[in-house]
Image (cartoon, rainbow, N blue to C red; front, side):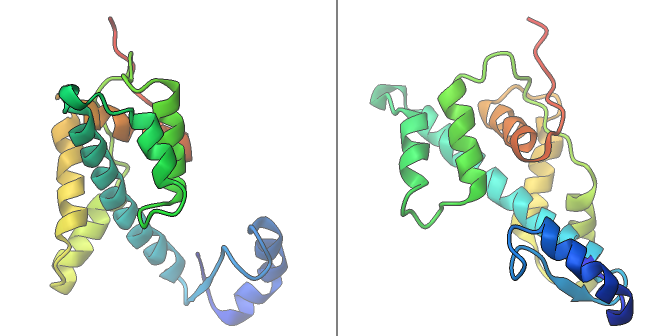
Length: 170
């Protein structure tokens, strides 16, 4: 997600192509200066919503003790042929396979600003963004709560972005 004038981007294009998963995909010249940052901000807002949906869904599955659902097995099955498959689900499956109790993880999900900016952009443009905005509010709510879905959200962020996880003191 690179912004800048065509003439400024041209000498950088070979570098971007080498860094990308493939020369013809996994990157985009988004337009003028500022457009790359804007596209990345919206990407992160979408990411907030997806992560929140996964965390809530797995928390619902986990909440049915009577069914004894193997969360790691469900995540693994969804990774192959399900409409909800994604790299984020791949990472979530790995977290659940390691420790589906999320022992030692504090239910604290930080926000680094992009979700706030995306919610504000929706307000500025008058475009409803309820999923992204509610996901941001859920992050705020996690700060001081001790729910399992917030623990899973924290671990998802750690997996894809190396974000810090608050560990329990007990």
